[in-house]
Length: 152
Length: 261
Image 1 (cartoon, each protein chain N blue to C red):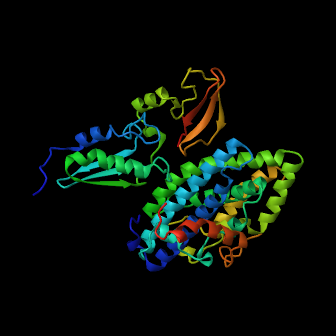
Image 2: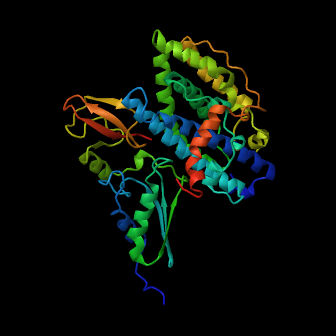
Image 3: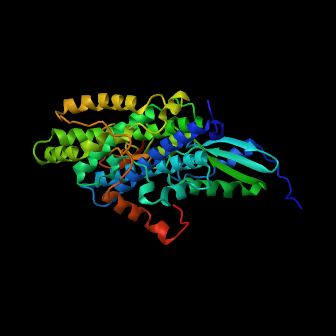
């Protein structure tokens, strides 16, 4: 007995993936983060090509598992592949993604203002931060530390 | 443009595997060694920075070992290559055999390494071996931050009067005999140049590196004699400091064979 065929195309899969949150910054989805590159839907399998934000990102396995779990309902084998054929860059983050980052207290890449008060009077405390993709800044106006997404 | 290792000539494939092994072992050893600063760096910001740098390097090593596993295709996976070799089987540059030392020594070692590694990566940017070219493109975007940070630290220590500068000079003097080992010519590297996998031989890369750091050393009034590395010993005869480090990074794997990272 084969599983009943569910009508599914690339757009269905992509909108399902838009519900998968980044494990380190749950406010942004992996689609808005620009991590989802290729989606191919076949009769038996769904292939998803994802781009690591950083080569050694420790969240990759968690992302893979979340993608597999989210796509399980489509009744096909899910094959998730990480690759470097296309480099992930911070330009891949969508406008909506940038707004989600700001709303959750992160300065989007290339934005030199404070996500809390909007002041431009900010200092870089550390090029490096608690994860590979973040650096640490300090707002001299509202006196809050915050994190910024590194430009790569 | 080549996409699969199987399409390479056997001699080219062997030379490529040595290049990848050298690069992966370099990143692995400096990454693991610098991760020892986690928790004990001279200030909190540097604790975070050095840990992040180390994490980047271990990630690069993992990706390079995976690529190497594809090229060698002898049944070993990335973890087996990374952990299941005796001390003598490691192929990192002798520069990285020096212990982490004090903060000035770690900065000096990393500055010398990062600048040489940047020259090597640049020489691979248009590689005809697509999987390596793509990975290098990605790695360079991260290494840019490393080099920026290390140059700032070198500047800071060299420009300070008294103890910081003295410690830096002492460290550079200890490292100088092995400084050029990262770019020392590799066996049969000419086949890599001819296949377009890398754009120059070790001698040419060494000259590019010297031109680059020479300008910085001159500006900071650091006069260093960096002897040309002997290719036969540049990546062999590892030190007691590395022997100790090897015991550390293989401890979990030996206690629990098949453990994954």
